[in-house]
Image (cartoon, rainbow, N blue to C red; front, side):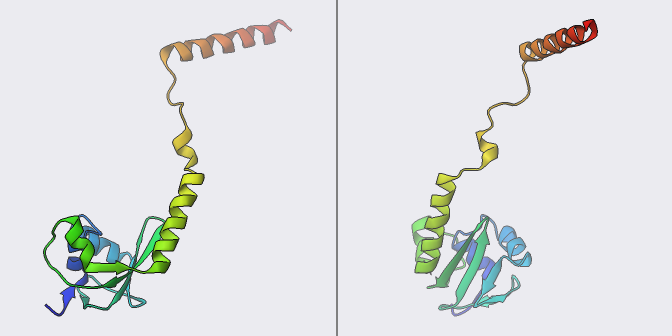
Length: 134
């Protein structure tokens, strides 16, 4: 096999769970081959450089082999080689995420319980009574 559609290859290499997800990401412009935006039917060959963005991280990989069959992860990892620059950027992003996690994840409070709501209403009622008495 000399050439293969990029959406099939991204699915077989386990970058996306389904071929339709791979096609959607390509259509959104998140996948580039050799620096150019592509369409899902773009034929890929060994040696092409693929840049894909997944969340905040951009991965840059070089196609080593082609396969249109989705196999186990260790086999899929043999289809590509990630560039050293890409590995360095991913490690830096992971370290940044570890040091400064998403603020919304630290929220422990949510909807108040019945007891907390009643205590809040009681406090407001007392505040209104003291306000009216002055």
